[in-house]
Length: 458
Image (cartoon, rainbow, N blue to C red; front, side, top):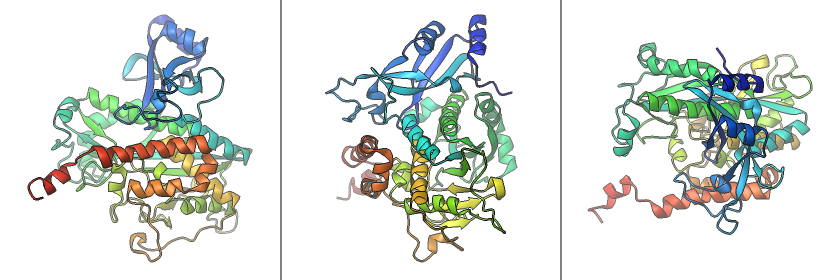
C-alpha cells in the first residue's frame, strides 16, 4: 500500500484523530542529508502552512561533514550565519511508515526576507537545470540504482570500534545468490515493503558482490522527484538499520580490499509537449536519436571536468579502480559495463546509464551536472558518439575520469561550461566547499596507512 503523498485534507483528518502528532520539515544539505526540524501539528500549521516558513540558519549549507562552519558567501561570521526560511513543498508531504505518528515534508530554502529561492541550496541548483531544460522543450527522467553495505554490528559498537573489523551481514561472496537473499530478507523485506509506503517505489533488491553488500533499484520518475526519493531512501535505510541494530554505510569504498558501492544513474530524455521519449530514433533500425546522441555526447565531453559532482569525497576516488565495474573509462558502450556510459533498453525504455557515481553521491548535484553537460552537447549539436566495442579499461585512446579529488577539483575549476550553467555564485560555492574537504584531509588528518608505514621506520 502506498501511503503518500498526503493531501492537506488527509493530513488534517490524521492530525485531528491523533494519528499524526509530529511533522518533520527538512531539506537536503550539500551532502544529501536531510536537515531541519520536528514540529508539532500546531507549529506546522502556523509556520509551514499559514506562515512564512520555518526559520533555520544558513549554516546548514556551509558546514563540512563534521558540522564545522566553512567560510562561504552564503553563511559566515560576517553575516552572522543569517537565517533562511524552509518552505514546505506540499507535493512531498507523506507519512513515515516506521514512525506511525510522524509525517515528513521536504522543504525548499528561501532567503529570509524575500521570495527568492536560496541559490546554493541543492534543491534550487537542480530546479535551475530542470528549468533550463524545460525552456528547450525537454524534461528528463532519472532512476538511482544504489548499493550499500550492512554490518551485523550495532551502530554504537561500530562507532566505538572505529568502524574496524565489523561483522558483515554475509560471510562470503554472494552476488545474485538467492540463498543469501533469503537470509537477509528479514531486513531487506522492510526496505522493499516500507519504502513504497514512504512514497519511494522499489523495483528490486539483491545481494551484491561485497560482503554484506546490497543493491536496491528504484523506479524511474521525473528529475526532482527522483532526487527527493534518492535522499528519502538513504534516510529510510539508515533509520531502519539503526532500529534493527545493523550498521549501514553508503561510502563509495569502505575498505580498500573490498569492492566499492556505486550509484548508477539512469537517464532518459522526454518532450515537455507530448510526454514522449526522445531517445530512440524513428529511423529504420532505431538506436540513438540525433538529439539524444548530442545529449549523451555532452556527458562524455564533460565527464572528467564534472566528476566532482559525481564523486564528492576523498573516499569516492578509492573506488575508481579498473576491473571493479566502476565507470572510470570515458566511453559509450551498448550494454557494456566496462564503459562509464552504458546504453540499455530499447524503444520507450531506451536510456543511458552513468556508472561514475558512488553511493556517496548527492543526487541533486549529480542530476544537475548530467543535465548541464547534456544540454551543452545539444546546444553545440555534437554528433552521435561512437559505440565502443570490447574492454574500455584496456582500450587505446580512452580517457579516464580523474582518480583523485585534487585532479577533479582542478578540472572543475577550469570548466567554463559548469560556471556558465550554474552561475558564478553557485559555481564558487560548490568549488570552495569541495576545496575545504580536500584541505581537511591533506592538512588535518593522519591516516592508519601513514602510522603503519612510518611510525618506526623513519
